[in-house]
Image (tube, rainbow, N blue to C red):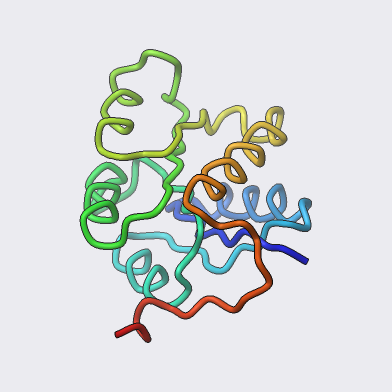
Length: 144
């Protein structure tokens, strides 16, 4: 089966669990890592080379916007920002898009709009060039 790999980043155990349940309902998606902070995020990016990252905006320590900037600078790939504040036209959403976010999704609508979130993940993975080939991906840490 063709899989799109996802790294879930959120400091809330509840939100991470909800995302895991929602995303694993689609057999073409595979969660390759779950991180609760910036340090763990960058370690998992290097180890798993995910196609897409879902990233919480509000996290302790390095917040999601700073993590997004560093991802775009060091490990560019599609990032979908999640926040209950992500509404159309919101300054935070505009900032996230300017910093390179491939999409923004309102976390408070994750359950009721799960199909839309899944469609967004698939679309941004496709834009990255991932076509779901059944070819093993080499982690960035192993690349020359």
